[in-house]
Amino acid sequence: MASKVIHAIYTDDDLLLQAVKQVRDARYHIAEVYTPFPVHGLDKAMGLAPTRLAIASFLYGLVGMTVAITMMNFIMIEDWPQDIGGKPSFSFLQNLPAFVPIIFELTVFFAAHLMVITFYMRSRIWPFKTAENPDVRTTDDHFLMEIDAENHDVDGLSKFLYDTGALEIKLIDNK
Amino acid sequence: MIVGAIGLVYGFIAAPSTIEDVKEMMASKGHHESAEAEVVEQDSHAMASEHAQEGHAMVGQHEAEGHGEAEAHGDEHYEHVLHQLQNKPWAALYVAAFFFFMISLATLAFYAIQYAAQAGWSPVLFRVMEGITAYLLPGSLIVFAILLLSGLHLNHLFVWMDPEVVAKDELIQHKSSFLNVPFFLLRAAIYIIGWNIFRYLLRRNSLRIDEATDGRYFKQSFKLAAGFLVFFLVSESMMSWDWIMSVDPHWFSTLFGWYVFASMIVSAVTVIALISMYLKSRGYLEYVNDSHIHDLAKFMFGFSIFWTYLWFSQFMLIWYSNIPEEVTYFITRIEDYNIAFFGMVVMNFVFPVLILMNSDYKRINLFVIMGGIIILLGHYLDIFVMIMPATVGKEWFIGIPEISALLFFGGLFVFVVFNALTKAPLLPKRNPFIKESQHFHY
Image 1 (cartoon, rainbow over the protein chains, first blue to last red):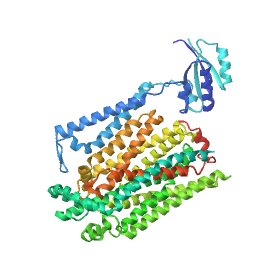
Image 2 (spheres, rainbow over the protein chains, first blue to last red):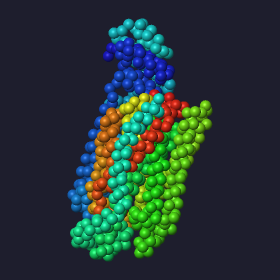
Image 3 (cartoon, each protein chain N blue to C red):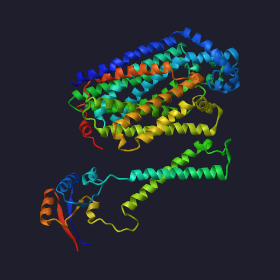
Image 4 (cartoon, chains in turn purple, green):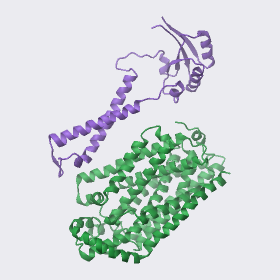
C-alpha cells in the first residue's frame, strides 16, 4: 500500500486540539490522531461521526431482556412449575415480580458484554494483535497527528504544521 | 435591571395564584363546614348498603388500617365511612402541602450537594435553586400546622393519635413510646427548625460571597452544606416515618426513608429544570445553555430509575414474603388503588425512561418539559398513594378538594419562588466556579 503520510508530534492536548482545527480549516486530511488519553472534544474537532454504540447497546439490552423472559418462562412456568412460598408457578404474569431481577440482570449483562465486544470489533482489537501505534511515545506524554500528504506539497505542509506548534514533523513514505 | 425585569415575571405569575386562592376558598368550605359532612352521611348510607354486602371482604382492610373495627357491621361501618369522608379534604390538603414542601426541601439538599461536591457545572443555577428553597419556610410551617391540628384531634389523618384506637390496639401501644403526640410534634419542630436554619445560613452566605473579597464565605458554605447533608439524611428519613409511614401505624418498611427521598429529589430536579427553562425562555438566564439542561435531565432520568429501583425493592420483598402485617399495605393499594398505584409506576418509570433515554432528547426543551410534567404528576400520585389508603380508604377520588389543594399550593409555591427569585441577581457572580459553569459544555 503506497501512501505518504506526515506524522506531527505535539506535547500538549490543548495545542493539539487547536492544531486539529487549523489543519482541518486548511483542508488537509487527518488520517488519525494518537493520544495517551482521551482528549475532550477531539472527536468533534476531527469531524468524526457520533458513535452508534449507544443504539447497539439498547438493542443488545432488548435481546437480553427477551432471552431472560423466554428462559424464565420455560424454566419456571412451562418445564417445571414449582410452588414457592405459596406462589404456584402456573402463570408468567403472576410470578413476574420474582423474575424482574433476573430480567434486569440479563439485560445489563447482554448490553454490557456485547457492547464491549462490539467496540473491540469495530476498533479492530483482538488478543495478540500487534499494536498499530506508530510511535511509542504516544502511550506516554506525546500526541501524534497523522496527515495524508499524498497530493500535497510536503514542504509547505511541514511549514504549516510547524506553525501550528508541532514539535516534530516526520514524513513517512510507504512505497 | 434584572431585578426589575423579573418583577414583571412575578407579576405575571401572581395573577394565577389569586384565582387559585378563590379555588382554595371553595376547598376550605369543604372542610370547615362539617355540616356538609352530615349531608354526606346520608349519601354514605346509600353507598354503605352496597358495602355491607362486601362487609367481610373489607374486614381485612379495616384491620390493616388499624381502626380496630374487626366487627365492622351496621352503624360502626357507616361511621367509619363517614370518618374517611371527613378525612378526605384534610388528606387532600396534606398531600398537596407535603408535595410542594418536599420539592423545596429536596432542592435544598440538591443545592447542598452542589456545594459539598464543589460542582463546577451548576453555579449558574444556584439562584434558581435558592429561589425554590425559599418555599421551605412557608411550606414547612403549613405542614407543621396540619400536623399540629392532627395532634389537637381536629382531623384524623393519624389514626394512632386517637386514644380510643390505641386503647384497643396492642401493636400501637407498643409503639407509643415513639408514636405519641408531644414527641411527634417535638421531632417535627426539630426537623423544621434545623432545615430552615441551614437554608437561611446557606442563602445568606451565597449572597455574601458576591460581596466578599476573599473565599472565606465559600469555605463556610462548603462546611455548612456538608453539615446540612448529614442532618438532612437522618432527619429526612425520620420525617418520612413520622409524617407518611405512621399513617399506617402497623406497617413498616426499612427503606421507606430512601423511597421518599427518591421521590423528593426527582421532583426537585424536575422543578429546577422547568423553572430554569422558563426563566431562560424569558431571557433571564443568559448563561444557562443546553448542556445544563442536559445535565438536569440526566438527573431526572437517573433518579427516576433510582425511584423505581426502591419502589420495586420494597414491593418485591413484601410480595414474596407475603407476611400478613406487611402485605396488607400493598393489598389495599392494588385492590383499591389499582389505577393510581400502577399508573404512577408507568408515569414515573416507563415514560421518563423512554422519553429521556436518548442523549439528544435531553437537550430539547420540549421533551424535558413533557417528561418533567409527567414526572411531577406521577410523584404527586406517589404521595397520594402513600397517604390516601390509610386515611381515606376506598373513598378516594381525585376531585375538587384534591385538585384545588394542588392548585392552591402550586400557586403559593410559584408565588413564593418567583418572589424570591426577584430578590437577588440571578448570576452568583463571585462564586469560584462561575467561570467554569458559564462555559460549561458537555
